[in-house]
Image 1 (tube, rainbow, N blue to C red):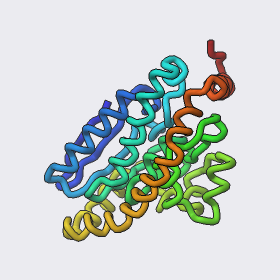
Image 2: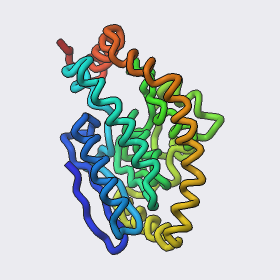
Image 3: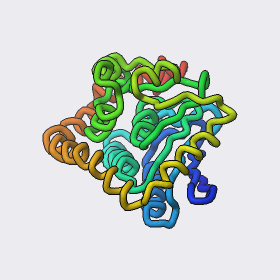
Image 4: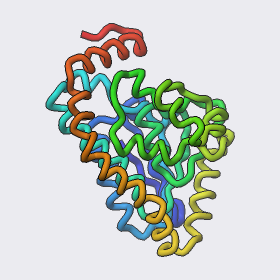
Length: 253
């Protein structure tokens, strides 16, 4: 599910879950546990990557349809916690986006401190509204922080997925890298960030992130109940089923 490889003071956190590293309850809980443990360890920085040509395809929609109301009620809090745990991770985190990073996969990548994406290797974007589901508050606020302000609303409303080069122009990634150099470049960036005194980096990151988390807490009180109700509504599940049928090229029961 998750492989951790130590490279000096940097840990490479590789997701290897199914074919697409799609987020379900078990993967979210495993990622959160690993991040919490690594946050307390002696490592100085973290690189997160995926497998093959997929970083993460986002939420496992088939599991959502299979599990329905009861599953979604457990899954959404776990997904929110995973995003927030990564976003607030006290040490430098670099994303080595090896391929497609779609919806929740894009949010997960954008929750890191620096993002490199393999050139000509996949698409990245946040098509949640095309799927028919609202953003969890923390996910939308992470994207608000990262995306270029001039493009934020269009990325959210239109749900267009971008090439690595387009994503760089719109702020979703910091740089594109040749695929065979991606991991080495990500580790080099992580090492450079790790050279900053850990206490200095940690408090600076808190200065950046705490304002976002404060907003998340405030907005969650206003919106998260309504968001959860929408995710579990029969009409939403029907819309997801239609999206899956069109996107996965096979009908759903």
